[in-house]
Image (cartoon, rainbow, N blue to C red; front, side, top):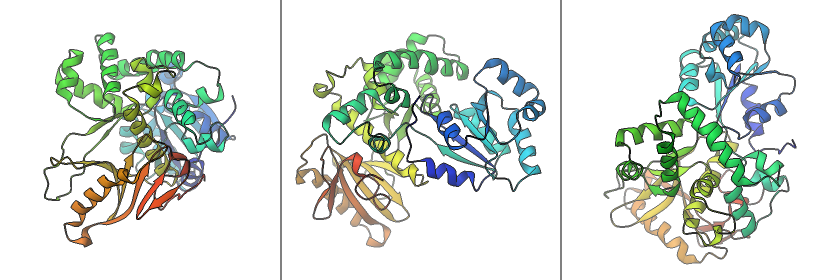
Length: 405
């Protein structure tokens, strides 16, 4: 399968030079193993996705590590939680050796507990998401255009669908949902009725980009609110959804309290809602899909620099709102999403309205570093202090600027 070079490669190489172990987390099928095997071809490889191998590793960790000595890539390590304590012992024998153990996992519950309990200070964690539009553009798979963005929202960020362009996306996601999502969920939770869970997934898809109301979601699916909360937690741990919290600063306003729900990839929304590529441009979900896509790109482009973003949305009871706010210290960046190829300056009005609210407090509290309207515009331009750009031109103020990197 052809390899698509990824913008995040340098970050992973850097942490592998500074830590004995590197833990790469992320959803199924987004390329964790392919990436590590490409970057570290001399490392031995073993996967615990095979039940027999996982059982051997968990029942006799010492023998397993002796049979698979460092340097090694251990795939889906969460299936053998007993390994973590023995990995600690192996690492401590040769603490100065960096990048010896490269671990992947797609279930954060067990994975991060093992890292916290045994590998604290010994392992760096990198959260990997799917291919970014910068990855695909640099590889020549897409060029800035409306059709390219529609293709990315429909086909998603899974490498397999871009290295095999003739593969039907609908068939891929049908298999993905039944083979990976449902299996992983059953391993974590005792889901009695998979049909209820499928309805729950569809309910989440139809609410992407919206404030989360667990009571409404639970009622529509026919489950309890506590069950809805539990299932949301599992999907979040599996990297399938993200909950974006509202800005909580004391700005003298009654602010929104509920998080916004986003699926990790807009293509999952298309698959779960039965939306075809042909119907996508006229879909009432298009605005929410674009916002979901931009949110994913913001997360990815922050990760390229090894920075964990502090991201929120803003909404108050005076109907002032903003799609995304990022924070670095006292520096804030505002982002607003618009599905248009010719954004007007009216698109910046909400940013200036929210900026006035933030600046009403002592100016020393915050500095508005950048205000960006993200659209399908093919050129970067500014109007006053507002930037207008597309996801393919770099979104993260101060880290990328314009143009592909």
